Image (cartoon, rainbow, N blue to C red):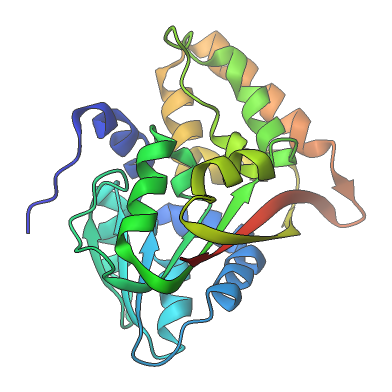
Length: 265
């Protein structure tokens, strides 16, 4: 099967792919939120469940433990390769969340854990979620809130990023606003919201930098594109930000998120 990635998504695919198998450590940091999402999508034995923007498959593997037939889809080929290398039941494929290959109503449930919020065209993703979810089926998405510490981490990186195009693309963190989520999904789904916090524990800010530099595509690609002076400045700012969450045994950063649950009308 040949995946079709739309031209405007080819660069994002490369960015996220760059984390490779090391992205699994990023998922470990947020494991409690991934479990929250799986419990709310409530997979049942034999159901067809889509894990959209699956990354290295952490959420898909959790869903498979419930006996569901899981398909994990991601735009990033190297993340999919890492997922396929893991033992377990899900099937995985490269695909574009804005243009899925599946039939209408193909899935009983759809999960996405901090994934579809980063798609380039939110309305297209929302339309695909509605199209491939059967009537009476459900979705569960966890997304970073627009005032979360994860959003603030992107704020640390933003001064080092190239200027955005004009007009600028929508912020991925807008998904974490209930009004925006309702605007995107409310016509097709009956929505319920829950808020949550997942805490990232590590040794210190430098340890966090090393994890993100290796496994988190946006940080890795940004650092790799900078000249040495700017890269060192980004590193210092990133470390200082994380060191602002010092705890007795290291750093403990709360990361606030919104869970969006929808029942397809």
